[in-house]
Amino acid sequence: MRTGRNRGLNYRSPLVSRYTSKEMSYNFSDKKKFITWRKLWIYLAKAEKALGLPITDAQIAEMESHAEDIDFAMAAEEEQKLRHDVMAHIHTFAHCCPTAAPIIHLGATSCYVGDNTDLIALRDGFNILLPKLARVIDRLANFAEEYADLPTLGFTHFQPAQLTTVGKRACLWLQDLVMDVRNLEQARDNLRFRGVKGTTGTQASFLQLFQGDRDKVEELDKMVTEMAGFKKAYLVTGQTYSRKVDINCMSTLASLGASVHKICTDIRLLANLKEIEEPFEKEQIGSSAMPYKRNPMRAERCCSLARHLITLMADPLQTASVQWLERTLDDSANRRISLPESFLTADIILSTLQNITEGLVVYPKVIERHIHHELPFMATENIIMAIVKAGGNRQECHEKIRVLSQEAAAVVKQEGGDNDLLGRIQRDPYFAPILGQLDALLDPKTFIGRAPQQVKKFLAEEVRPLLEPYKANMDVKVELVL
Image (cartoon, rainbow, N blue to C red; front, top):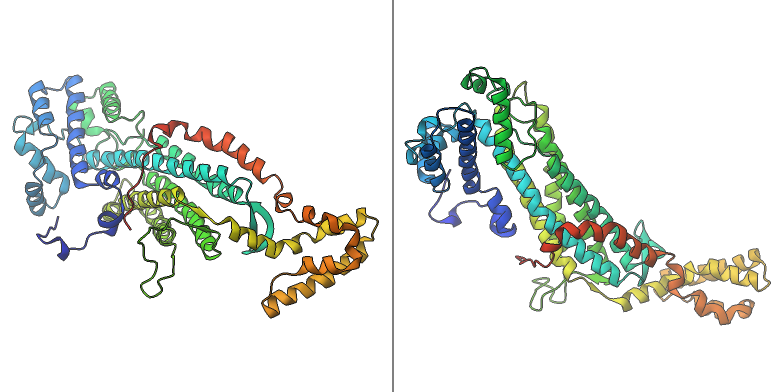
């Protein structure tokens, strides 16, 4: 491990130094990793003692008393000499536990601590992310409920389409995040422990320790698995657990990244339209050159980091594909980077998105102006139907409106004027029989279909029940580094 007295002289990952939370940073820290290694050695010793190996209570007590006082300088020196991180920490642990030294790591291979610690970090990482994702969903659900019936222009191909509501659009975002909660829960719950498997997964060393007693070896595996907080261990491993496990975990995070990128891109587009904006601090500067600007920097940060999260998915796919036979070591350096970075990146994305969703600003008057700019075109079918009901001819009315619509469109596109189709209709004597109905025919709320009801039903049936397990963490605020 290379260190420097002046931290400014050494590269530090922005994921840790600038963005991620303390709890996620600690989850993948050296301190937690090596404390977990020591706990795993203690679990192993306890289980081996319980099953009859000559290990004393004093040895276990000695190990427990030194579980967290790690001499990192000594470990670094040992690793420099031995070129083996696990052996370096065995020696370091043994130095402060001289009585227990002969039984530390008894029968195990390096992957006993390495892989099992990784699985604990993955599990704990999901447990950090899930409440954060739940809070984002809660904030967005509140937003959707508040604006469930506020009409707004829908867009397909980023061209004006039929109306929807601001709340219904938020439910499109929510639906993706609801899927992500279920995916993350499933990935966490599907995790198993590597357990006590030996150098190539055959448990041969432990069978020798227990003089061929297969039942004791199986019980040893079960006992250590339960001590580590897992319900099951993988029944079959090589030296490592299958690297497809990493694929399953990181694919759920990459999928979350895709959801967040879509949401934040939508917010950026809406900010350009001046319909919705992310929070903007009183003294925040949008541009060093253009003082009037209110850049959507939070949403942009989410998109930037989400791309990184998505691209990290390539690492476990390729790593799993090249694990020869019982294992090769070309996974190690890659996983040291890709696994933590996936969780660190997802962590800051969710914290930032929570900040955004807690302070989204809606501008109803701008939204209304945009609707009125496009609604006359959208209302033409309603006008045609009203004329027919008043005794008119559909084809004749269609031709009248076609001509007037093209004239109005020319004013908008060629002259830069406002959409004056409604005025043209009001001035044309042909439409006199329905002039009294125009306000009703152009009421935006008659164009939003069942959007408000869909919002209510979706929140009640899909969203609120999903949040129940996370209610205790719902009021947590985030401190966003800008």
